[in-house]
Length: 243
Image 1 (cartoon, rainbow, N blue to C red):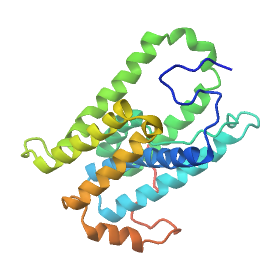
Image 2 (image 1 turned 30 degrees about the horizontal axis):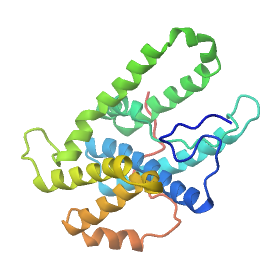
Image 3 (image 1 turned 135 degrees about the vertical axis):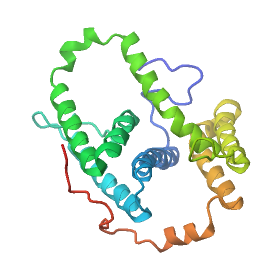
Image 4 (image 1 turned 45 degrees about the vertical axis):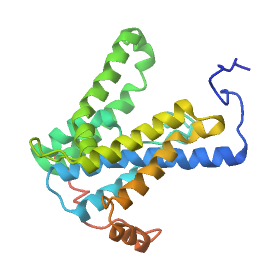
């Protein structure tokens, strides 16, 4: 068994109790769901409607499910045999925005298809090319992905949509409280509560957003009235392609 660092509650070979595992699973689902913001950002940037954004999220969730199932297979060249949930990758955001601005959603679909196809083919030989990707190179790539998200993240954090708009104090306060809550729980809390810092931050964020009116009660009613299972709508031309 691997030696557990002193600052970890559970080591890599340890199995947490079922209640802890269940809560961490819910937290992971919420964390994964946050990446669904990325297709919404793309649809919003090219002026699509709310229904189109809703349809884009629905189709994205279907694609995530299909990709996760295929990844769990281990037959021939398909899958790794592990449960590796697919996400909306931030590394695609910049190029997806460029494609959407240039040719709309059809061009973005075509770009995503060919990028995914290339990734699949490249995965068959990447183990032979690892000498070309030392830690310094991969570290810079990961850093640049994060840097590319700074403008979008910062604008959402301070509540502005267009450069030059006045700062929204309410957005800044709520965002800061959420961030400080996650950091504070993770660093200074005692016991197992550190494990749930993200989930606690999300709950605090929803409460503050509702209290301050950033998340109107009407939006909660729309969520409660939505069907638990339903086919995606036709708000987005999901099956049109451009290359």
